Length: 196
Length: 249
Image (cartoon, rainbow over all chains, first blue to last red; front, side):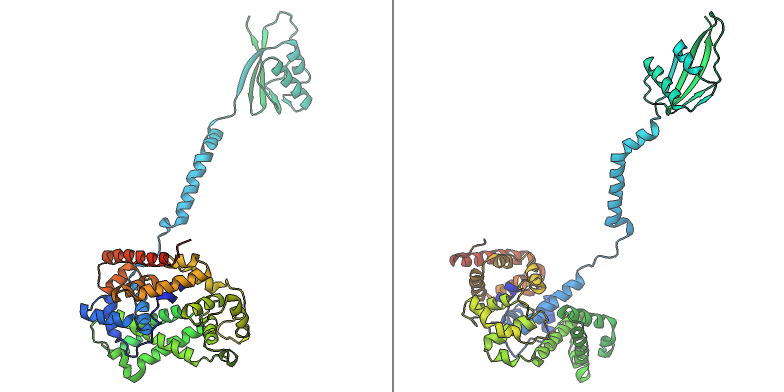
């Protein structure tokens, strides 16, 4: 309670009565169970007797506190923490969902191309007969050659050749094309002969 | 009604414990209060419990009885306490300051205002600070922070925070010292001039923070009527405050 108002209007200014209200009458007054004449008498006394006033107001507080429904135990699904957790999950899905969907559903782009096997490409293929190119210089040379031929390849880590390539002796042999599939920075190469 | 059965019931014991805990902060006082109330209820062959005639509910009767006994206990406690001789020599005003600060844990600032309101001290605040120096040096078992000159300690802050939705209390808090003392005197005079019903209504709602519904039941009015009456009473308080030049800052 406010200290100033309590000090200002507490019935302590006048000398206290010695003839106090009977406890049961105070209880009846607190319950509103007194008639008008009796109420007037009791209220007149309470305005002059600090002790009876204090007993009444403390009793009113206790009875009110007891009759006011106390909040019972809240089921776990109604706690604020659960709501906060649910909101966090929804927000995370809203914000991160599109990225996650994009990440999981959009496979990295696969480049498929078919290039005429010109001399420059043949030279790269003929450097050795390894099917798995592990020399970075050779991989980079192929990358540059592909880029020069218009393929949108940014980087290559590995090149896998389907079978060793050997130079054809015939000047009029079948036309050769290099079929390329690039996925996850790995180039799969296969040389195919095309009928003229 | 079997008083022995009532006294041994867990419901009554819980009531006594709740009331004592609410009225006393120190655990020792709470325990002494609990024992005092039980002994008093047993006294004279349960005379106090046997006095119940069934005109009110037993629950309200028991709360009223316990609260009455707790008030007796508090008064006996204060009665046992002695004001140090050095304080008593200074006069009634000094004893009052000691009671306010040491026993009731108000600040020296509060005590100065209360003394001015009750007309127990007429000097300035500076004079008060100087004259209360011997009081600050007096021993005080009840309040270890007694000698502190920190005027914003916990108990004072608790009182301020308890203003709640009490418009008169909030207004008084915002005033400077001189205006505050003047305002409280105006509120006292205005209250004293009200009808008996209105006095109790104002005391219960603005002096003790009871709800309007609870106060209305005591006065014998419907809650809505009591609410309207409080509004008009607030207007009266404002008018009387304005008449002496006090308005809400």
